[in-house]
Length: 115
Image 1 (cartoon, helix red, strand yellow):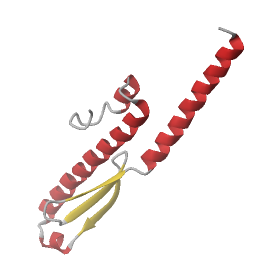
Image 2: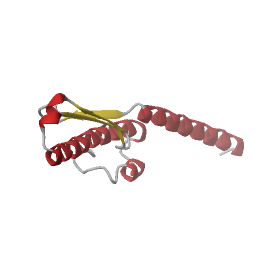
Image 3: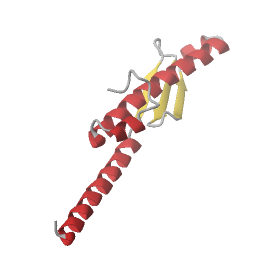
């Protein structure tokens, strides 16, 4: 193959990869998940990485014992993290397809989330 042509094709591949990475990054910035406890006492929002963004407590939460409420917050946060991981996996699968790169990114995601 002509070196100039090879270099042009290589640059095109790099530009497509760079564009895809920017698109994925922007899509992931928009990913967040909110989960609510079964009776609505607690709502927890996390970002794509599962980091806590917000905790909301309703008046129902005030009637709960502190230890029970704390456990409910943790359980609800775990559900929000599971939802965020599912969405993150979907976003990345759209950019990477079923590839070793997707496997590397999702290796710490709970197994029930990874396709």
